[in-house]
Length: 279
Length: 157
Image (cartoon, each protein chain N blue to C red):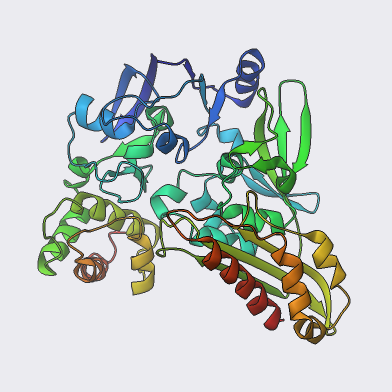
């Protein structure tokens, strides 16, 4: 059996982390499956565990300096019902897993699990969300899109814990979320899409496009988005092939048990096209 | 070994064991409460559902540590409540039970849904039950039972 600690508060958790590279476990909905053993046996964790889900100081949603600040142990079901949750994040959470799983899963867990098919990351990338990583002596803020380095790989350091997710307040005239999965609930995406845009006086003032499950990390290309700002939506629609070609270079899906490369690529391109046609 | 304290079906209890164990194993093997079943073992089927602070949670992917200082209710204690009596009558009336293995979880899901939203639409009922699989595929009868329970149990939730 590995060593386990249930810290009483955040300060205690930070002290433990400073002393040893504990694995922080929040709701455990990914980790308990990844480390599953035979029924009745303890899960096969190899590293010491720090159980942080019940740290009440990390359960909150509030406005703070023009941002929405979400404590890292806030569960998804609470976010789904909270008036401060950005609309596009709410749309995504509403089809993640099931009510039972949402009650014990967290945005911070979804970020650190760093799955290429993570759904909440679609909204967090689109909203330019940041995470606050704290250790006993340091605190840093990192964009979620920079936090994730690859499948199951993030730049969180051994002695750090995510304490907060910060989402800049933004308004959009158009928000779209489409998830293509095997069924409505409890499905891992074959491919999923978030599109957000702000159209003012028939000009695209803000454009954000994010795709999951079609490359090693989620795709958001700010360089492509910025090329199409301050243009009328019908200009984008008439240049559809150019836009799709630009994205095609980044769409590099794999074949797996859920879908195949061809289907994923074509669907991803169709979703971008469909969104731009609605602007 | 760590001592975990929680309220279990209305009683304060303490267990000293490995806190990373699946709560489902603790329920079935240590506490001898076999109402929660093991179906998929990975959070997809809802047969292992229990109420934590009144909300449905899958006990098969819940580490014991996470119930520390929380309130747990299983189908065994819930079956002694007035709300249960309404749900039971509705499930029987609508013929919702076939093989029965999903039913403890379905009832926990019904209670969790009505606790949060006492007057759900059909679509909200389907979302509320979306984490519970019935391999006899009697979903329509189960949805009808929830509709009947919410009508006959008005004021209880």
